[in-house]
Image (cartoon, one colour):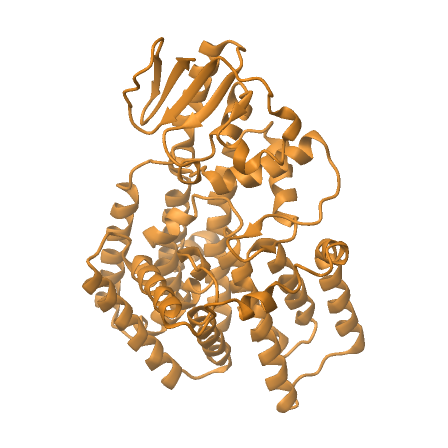
Length: 474
């Protein structure tokens, strides 16, 4: 009876979590995106599986020259080893991580605010088609929202118990292994500590401080080794960024960052190709809501939330490098919390109707998105081509720039026959130099997303919709 009573009391929450779970695990293989970023991580992980040795850095961050720690590469290697190299395990890991982020958001918001704000923020965040799309990828940016939520939780808890600074130290060091956008929490942490020192509310024991330092250095250690060997080149990257020509105060760069911000926030609410005027309208509405929040919100949790919101806006607007939409993944859970605090003031009926419309539209948008990633279709194509090749060496390429249609070199090794050489070698050949054939193979496999007519003799076409492989003999 007690269990049924609990279920009746929490039926909206249970239904919400069930729906969110289904959205993340329906068509796991079909909707998983395995592109060049996933291939990069997987090839690094595969190199550890074949020849394990300590590595000190992971992937580089875009155009910055900054290298992350190797933590995510080790995780990739472990998962691929458990699955016998099958990247489908990454698809399930991505969906599971997305669901855990939703759980963390609800639990944190319920503890720091109330259950109504928590439920609304859960629906806004986890029901977004934009978030659902990113939850079907497993790459460095994937844990960003979870780490951001944990920072928010730890900042609040550390006010009453200094032992939470150990978690903050762990998260700061872990950020160096995940994504550069999380380094925004370094100045946020410093600001919060300085503010508490000024108010004489920063009370931390020597034992806790020492433990926090040890935890940070232990997790950051691989990057320390790399910097010592390379004359602290990685550590000095932020200095180079700030001194780079066309720095953060260039109006054109700031305008491009603002465009990305407008697009990301608009997509977070409605992930469709809206006209620019509608995107700007959505952005302005959110700006007004955030300004209202900054001016009127009360409470300790909201005070920390205001600090995070302000730093995100300023830091990414003035950031001197390239920014993409996934840089804002750590900001979006907080946008959901701000919106939820405003919406919880509505009466029940209009609130329920508004949330139903929101979740219905976003679900429809997500379900109707084309399955361009479709790992299972790619797997079927690789297996068909490999059966035809029957161990004959071949050269692998794609019909367009590999940067935008990558992933195939790893998939052929995992699911079928490894190519003797490939288009991917110019980007990733340094990872597997001894596996590239010096002799030109007689067969060439050209993969495309649509059937392409090629004016070559001895052409054989193999299809696994929407992908096609044309096999040519030179």
